Amino acid sequence: MKPLKLLSLFLFSSALLISCSPEPTQIVEEQAQPLAEIASATAEIEAMLHEHIAVLASDEFEGRAPATPGEEKTINYLQAEFEALGIGPGNGESYFQSVSVTEITTASDAVLTFSGSNYNAELEYATQMIVGSQQQIPTTSIADSELVFVGYGVVAPERNWNDYAGIDVTGKTVVILVNDPGYATQDPEVFNGNAMTYYGRWTYKYEEAARQGAAGALIVHETGPAGYGWEVVSGSWSGPQIGLQADNLNSDKNDIEGWLTLESAEALFAGAGLDYQALKDRAAQPDFTAVPLGDVTASVTIQNSVRTSQSQNVIAMIPGTERPMETIIYTAHWDHLGVNPELPGDNIYNGAADNATGTAALLAMAKMHADAGPAPRSIVFLVVTAEESGLLGSRWYAEHPVFPLETTVANINIDVLNTYGPMHDIVVVGNGSSELEGYLELAATAQGRHLVEEPNPERGYYYRSDHFNFAKAGVPALYAESGEDSVEFGKEWGAQQAQDYNENRYHAPSDEYDPNWNLEGAAQDILLYFDVANKLSRETGFPNWLDGNEFKGIRDASQSARQ
Ligand SMILES: [Zn+2]
Image (cartoon, rainbow, N blue to C red; front, side):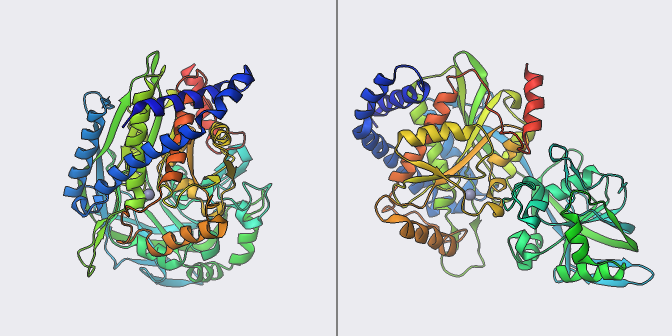
């Protein structure tokens, strides 16, 4: 590698970004120069990516499953590469942060019973309902627990919305709709309209129900607003559920969490003398109040087997020269799905695109920042474990932060890079969220590229990778990806490539490294992220969420604590 070329490009990029107003002539002069340098810089980045992806996605790394020999190889490789770059450990003397992962398997013979004066039913596991618990103990249950329909189960003070207002659900079982009132009404003025908010995610619904003291929480499944069919719910809830080990064994969580099929829910509401569809419509209105389901109660007991193992987040850092506790944290998950011995033929989930590319990107960016020299603020490279099991490594970090969250300036997350060559556009996932998007837009403009809207915001991808755990802790988090408008082959071709990946390689053994991948677009994206981080590392301000965002309140509170 020849750091000189990269370095001069960086200086150009940051000069362009920093000098929005003063000395415009200087920008014009410099603009003509670096176009050739963009090409040589991207060529260097591409070479680094190819080198690292080939190793990380090799069969020898066994699909990089947490707590396997594949993990040992992966984290040792990462440590050795950071050391070779002269970049020190990010967790005191260590490059690792130990993550305690707990696996809970619920026995599949559980029966959910509804009893009322006019309605009695016994629901079968997996076909009519699915239940489990995050409590890390062998048995949990609800017994004759009163049922309450709480609509979307949302408490959003910034939107003046509280589905739990005026009702005490302590010890009761709440029945909740999936997604949010914005999706239900398709009114852009209600929540975020069609685009999902965090209040629409099922994880939020259980968290809120537990905060309200409910013993049980049951979500009604509907394919449209959930974004997936019942088989996805029953499939992903059956078998081992991976979580983080909790000191309190998650005793503050609901005793029982689960889902009802739409049919089961309709029968339950009818049995309580209520009309599910009519109540669902009311739940999308601001004046909705929770409705008890007559005298119907719920009972179920589940048996869990619980097992704990250790995995590692990898952390390296370039300390800031002036304000080292102020950090810009890059994240990418190193883990993938491992090996499935029951599969005939190739049974290694190499996870080349997902997420050897992002992991390699963090190594490439580590080199770029090392070459650019230290900044006033620290740059942290956090390569997390167990993303595929539910964003666990990043959640562990957010719950056990090495650097204070209130002085964490921003998170930039990379999960799957573009392997199809340069694109005109870049997609901000969850766009309209934070001020970081303005930084990205400036950098993209300098590359002659532009930001585009997320194609399927209702799927809530913003809540489905590691940056989300930073967002939840209030830290502005940026998650972007190349668009589909191929410079060489156009939009239709670009969309075909994305579809081909989703249908034929996503989470399949065929997600393998191909030396013919065109990583030029990926390298351009990396330059954008570098520009954003590099600029932030030399500023003194703290970017925030945009008004109306669900995480702004948390950030505002942590910022007033900082001051
Ligand atoms: Zn991923």
